[in-house]
Length: 154
Image (tube, one colour):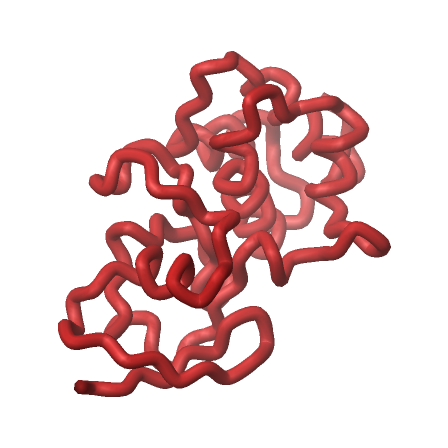
């Protein structure tokens, strides 16, 4: 069985994958990293968003072969309860989560945006979060949280 070397949350992991096209999402969840959720499986809902080399990607559409050798960050590696990432802290302060299913994907999309642009406009934040579906309607609070995390008020 082919082995793939993945740098996940700062640690090297060697994983077996019968198929090079196996979605990264399945690999991550198989390793017990369950913050990335299976939503649509088509890259249209954002529930599975992770960072690959600092860029937000849908892990259901990213293959294990594509991820090999790249820095993969999941919500579990973004921050901790004792020291949350600024986006995580802002999501808590703004009381963004409702059911919570989309929350990890939104946080990862926001973290990806802020890693590329420290002070995005509200329009850029909305565009970055556009890939994240939320049936609870928490997008307004999420945008406010990202603006706060970037040191701006929305």
